[in-house]
Each structure stands twice: as structure tokens, then as C-alpha cells.
Image 1 (cartoon, rainbow over the protein chains, first blue to last red):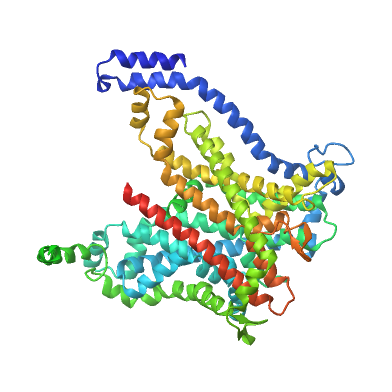
Image 2 (cartoon, rainbow over the protein chains, first blue to last red; image 1 turned 45 degrees about the vertical axis):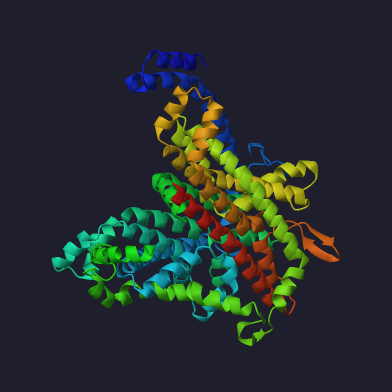
Length: 310
Length: 320
């Protein structure tokens, strides 16, 4: 407050605002903000500790014996009766009559394959739509925009039946369903970006004798990179965590993804081994947190881009 | 008169327009012809998948909402009966009000808290990137895992009071609110930070020189300038609230069940879950048709929110 006032009187003595030395002004602001900044930092630190607590609770409970998870959720498992060591992780591996690693593998296959397919196919289609711009292209484009507001429950029954008839019910074929249902946002973002690319570059390539396919892969493709990363991140986050679509489309007895596996633990067993479930949850969170810490910059950028456009 | 006057001008302009069009795609684009020959490569995969994954199921879904059916092949057209049945269904109406209440409460809480955090993080404090990382982290965790994780925590607390989140619908409601806040604040915060960083620094300096207090600056400079972000976040959290499924299923799955008017009603069941349960956990002969009708109503509801958002943002863009 004191600094504030001081700052104010300073500005008064100067004739016009333009005469103020910007460096000096910034310095004054910094001083006044320092104390405030400290208070904010402390408050935020407390909140962020609270924020991390649920994940820490999972970590702690995954080392506890089953019976103590519910009664002593917030106790540290260092007493002899409570400590379960890595037993929970061992039981977790084959828990619920389905090998845990299989569900990880399925999730991985589906996520990577679908994301690759979506990024490749929709970027090509978006370039075609933006450049050819025929009536058919416009219809596809507006249908894609429209599909973004349609909730999954609207099509879930018919989509799962269609996918069943077309034998799209394995991890290797379900990416086609994802490409179809997830095309909307991707096409929308890519078309928006392609329109901002100056057309002269492609025309120059065409004059030099470059065909459409080479023009796309050599010239347009590299320019699309930032949008590709954004789209890829958004699709990965959606597909890795998606529960209902794979649950309805996949042949559940043979193929489960991580979310399906975890929901099964809770849904179909009378007495659940809570310790083992916690170990499973921890094992399913760890890969995504590593992914997050590794590509944090892109994730946050991608989310901001997707939100502003969607 | 006015039209007649402007017409020749337009005619004069049209050749120029054509030239411009050549540079933005369409008829004059050099690659257009050759590109069209390659449409099987560029356009076909997405179009085919889009028809399988969206267009066909959507059309079939609308048609089936007017039918009585157990499997698709024995669908019999019965008109609007399914819709009448859906609106008469007490559980559906309850889940509608419950969802609306949830959407509004979570909308307010998430946005106020996310804005406050974003505001704090843009004050040039140390370690703001670490805080941002922490607050955004829950977004990466999926709804099912989130629900399971939080049910463990809530039950850990509530078991000391001899109750559980499945036994009390008040706990169920607020539990879901806490869960959603935990998950969504980070997401909205990112959007608000982007909006706050886009405000030119001069505006704050000008306010300071004019002697505005902090509160005045907040309400008269900061908030009006982040309105585009506010619109996005408000609609995002509103649609998220209405479409919520995974978290609802994993946290309470609609429990507890109480008898209301002679029918068992799941107290914490939201719209999406209600539709799901009507489809897959209801043995009545009309269940599938009713569920599809509910799904269409649900779609219209969400689409209207989306369209209002679109119109609203468009209007805002014009004003700027």
C-alpha cells in the first residue's frame, strides 16, 4: 500500500504520462507486488498440496492391506498389520479374471492407432475440403461441425450395433469407429488452420511440377505440425480415458481397456479387494502422469487451442 | 433505388473478386483439378468412417426413436409414443432436474474458482508454472478412475460417521461437485490465463494512473476484457455438466435408490446415465424405444446449449 501511494505521487509530479520512464514504473510495480506475491504463493502452495493429496492417498493405500483401506484411508501404512508391501500389485496383475497388462496393451493399441489414423486422415481430408471447396466438401464440413454438439448417448446404441455388424469390435478395427465419431473436432481445427496458410506456396510447387500428393506430404504436412500436435493431444486424452464407446463396441470378454477393467472391478464383485484396486489405479495413473510431465507444454497449448476453437 | 445504384459497382468489382478467390481455394486454384482426381485418397477414408461412425447411427437413431424394438431388425413404427413415455417417466424427469441443478452449481463454482486461480497465477509470482502443472494434472485422469479414486476418499471420511457416499444423496451430489471441481478447475484456468495474458498491459497502467482501486480495476478492466474466455468456459462447463457420464457412473452409479410414488428412483442418476440404464438395464418391451427417444431429447437439449453458445460468441466477435 505504501509503495502504491508513493508511486501515485511520483506520477503526479510528472507532466504527462508519456514522460514517465517505463523502466522506473515497472520497478515501482515490482516492489509493490513483492509482498502480495509472497502471500499469493503461500496460499497457492497450500491449495496445490490439497490438490495432490488424492493422488498421494492412492499411492499410500496401494501399499495397505485390504481391510485398512476403508477404515484408515488417511493413515500411513507403516504399522506391521497395515503394510502389504507389493502384494497388492501382484494380486492386481491378475485381478478380476483379466490380466491387467492385457488391458494396458489394448488401451495402448487403441489410443495410438486411433490417434495416428485421425491425425493423418483428417489432415488430408481437411486440406482437400479447404482447397477444393465443392458443395460435397461443404456438406461434409458442416456435418463435422454439427457432430461436435451431438452427445454420445444419441448414437451409442445404433453405433455399437453398426460396429458389431461390420466387425469393428477388436482393438485393431475400433480406430475406424474413433475416426468416424472423432472426426468433427479434428476436421474443424485443421480446416481453420489450412485456410490461414498462404496458397501461393502450393501454387509455386504446382508450377514446378509437384502433384497433389507430393504437395501435401512435402509442403503442407510440415506446416500443419502445430495443429497436428494439438489435435493429437486432444485425441489421446479423450481415447485413453474413454469408457463407454469401447465398452459398448468391443467384445468385452476378450478385450478390455483400462477404464473398462477398472469399472469391472467395482461393478461386478460383491467384496472388492480395495488394496489391489488402489494398486491398479496407481498403475493406470502413472503412465498418464509421465506422459503429462513429458509433453506438458504441448498439452496445455493444445487444450487452449481446442477450447478456443471448439 | 439503393440497390440499383450499387449494382454497377458490384459488377465492376466482380472480376477482382474472382482474382481474390483464386488465392483462397475454390474454382481458380491451380491444384483443384488434379486434387479432385485424388479424392479417393484424401477424402474417402474420413467420409466412409464418418458415415459408419456418425451419420448412419445418427439417422438410424432418430428413426428408431419412433419405433418399438428389441433388436434393430424388428423395429415397428409407433409414432410419438416413445416420447410421451419418456416425458411420463419419473426417473427421467428427476434426472433432468438433478442434472440441471448439478450443471448450474458446478458451473458457478468451477468458473469462480478457476478465475480466481488464473488471476493469482498471472500476478508475476514465482513458480507459477509449477502451480499450473499441478492444477491441470487431474484433467489427464479419466472419469472412471477419478470416480473410483474419490469414492475411496469420501468413504474413508464418511465411514467414520457410519455412512457412505452410496447411502446419502446429499453426499452424492456434493461429492460429484467436489470431484468435478477438482478435475475441471485446471482446464478452465488454462483458458482464463490465456485470456488474461491477452489483455494489453497499458490498460492496467492507465487504470492505475487514474487512481482506480484494485477492486475497480478488476471489475472495470479485467473482467470486461476476459469476457470471451468467460463465455467459452461457461458454456464448456455447462455442456460438460449436462453430458457427464463416467464420473457419475463410477462415483455413485445413481445410488441410493428410494421409492417415490411407488417406483424405485435412483437419487443421484444424471441424464446420460438414465438413458444408459433405460437402454441396457431395463427389461420392459418398450425400454429401447423409450431410451432412444430420451437420447434424442437429450441431444436436442445439448445442441440448443451449443447453438446458443455459437450465436453468443458470434455476436461478441462482431461487437469487437
